[in-house]
Amino acid sequence: MVVSKMNKDAQMRAAINQKLIETGERECLKEWLRAKLTECGWKDQLKAHCKEVIKEKGLEHITVDDLVAEITPKGRALVPDSVKKELL
Image 1 (spheres, rainbow, N blue to C red):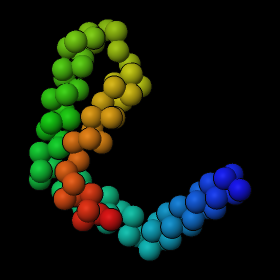
Image 2 (image 1 turned 90 degrees about the vertical axis):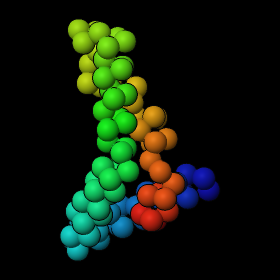
Image 3 (image 1 turned 30 degrees about the vertical axis):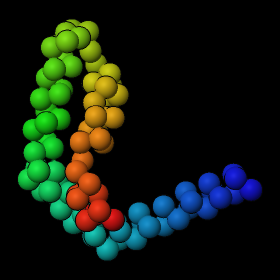
Image 4 (image 1 turned 60 degrees about the vertical axis):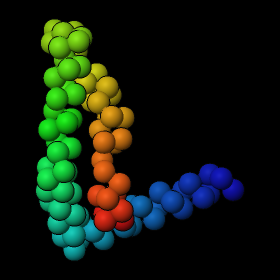
């Protein structure tokens, strides 16, 4: 039953995503989100965090994948609740 629910959830997400793409709404949402994140300083905060991580580990010792893995949790945590609520 758990697998079935997970499968239904995945199908629902895929259907919603497809509809958003077809209507062009997905691009509109992405642009809106970019603007909001830039407006609230999220982009600058994450950029500063990237610089810290690179400085700490050394440019020669970090890959793009490592950097993404390192900054993703902080990036998600830095999204203001107001933006999350407005998006949903």
